[in-house]
Image 1 (spheres, one colour):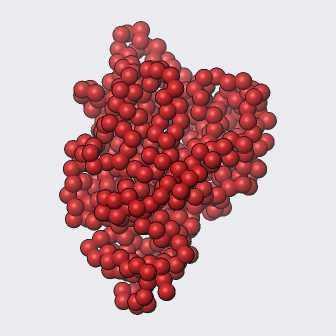
Image 2: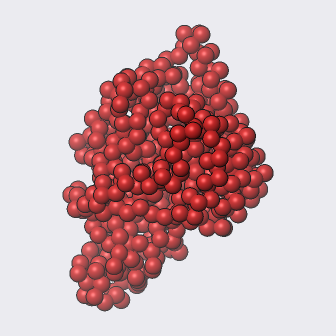
Image 3: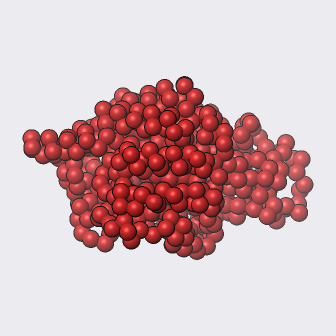
Amino acid sequence: MLDLIIRGGLTVTPEKEGEMDVGVLDGKIVAVAVPGTLEAEARRVISAQGKIVLPGGIEPHAHIGIPIPEKWAGRPEVITSPPQMSSRAAAFGGVTTILDFAGNFNFAPVDGSAQKPIMKVIEERREIFKDHCYTDFAFHYIFRGDELEAAPEAINQIGEAIQSGLASFKIFTVHAPFRVPYGHLWSVFTEVAKHAGIMVVHAEEDEIVTYMIAKLKREGRDHGYNLHLVHNNLSEDISFRKILRLAKHTETGVYFVHATAKEGVAAIAEARSEGQPVYGEALHNYLEFTCEDYKKPDGTLIHTYPAIKYAEDRDSLIAGLLDGQLCTTATDEWTTHKDVKLSGRTVETVCGGHNGIETRLPVVFTKLVSERGMSLQRFAAITSTNAAKILGLYPQKGAIAPGSDADFVLIDPTIRKKLKLGDLHADSDYSIWEGFECRGYPVMTILRGKVIVEDGKLLGSSSDGRWLPRKVSPAVLTWPVV
């Protein structure tokens, strides 16, 4: 007897989309079959008639339960929403796996001699999520520039961390104390490539950002609505191309988080055309808003670093997701309350981040499938499958296929729904998506064969989530396979 059968839905597999039945046993998919051919007996049969059955969403970029810089928050000791609250919102949004971060999140400079070993940091982070997460989870490890300058021997721990299942390492090319100098970055890339990991990169040109902050302050134009003049198109162009040159020399795979500009999309596309294993991500708020929206009352609520830019940049990101030059969508999840988010009013003090982990799938479905005709296979790719492949979770995650985890989201494409704060589940008192009209919406989320959300009701437990060890496929690190 099967544990679960999902019958009659428009099912999206890596090979095709069509009406198929899916059988689940012991948390795994055991059959994807022609309708009516699976054995009739199961502990539960879900009728998915009229619904789209997709692999559970994978959020590749979240910042959960970490300190917010005092200059952003307006007061000390404020943290983003904890795992239990953020993962609950994720589950309602059809997300079954979250990739968060491990590392030293304190924005104050530190003494590198007191730096903890990478494996210790990972273990402590796992304990924070254990029994407090409705979804499965994994981590990228963040290298800070000040720590590497003080204790460069930390790079020697990369191999052990990858062997343990970490797989990905994030660096910043901007924002002291996180900015990693290029010499140290060269060593990090080399070591990550040696052990078959992948780099996750927040790329901005620090000298341009620093110069523009000083320039706008000097001219009395450092208002928050001018963020796009600081974190600008030229900065993205130069920084992306520097990283791509470094990656080419060291033969390292690179995942660029939050591409924001047409120049970034072009740089990624050029590298991919030459065979570099380079992958780009777009945040869903960048697919809707432009820098003109910063000027509206409380307009910086929409802000995520780097800055939202012009309409042509938004259109380039959308085109990149449609034509395959960009590979994933994400949120840069950073849930706060409105008073914190609006505490800073200048280009130095506007609070970054976006509480969107619940809204990504319905917003992206609306903008790209309903409005622009994106295929369901491509939608599954940019919300789940590609993240799983790039970051070392495939085929356990990201696929409706025998042997994969039984993670699903069922979307009803007939639902027309205006988003309202009261209908969402983030630990926050605002949503930048208030009033956005969705055309299609998640109605059921299933994690490893267990229904965790159904028709707006939470059925899962905060102890359901498991930590996921990862290993990146050699193909992903050799050629742009997605």
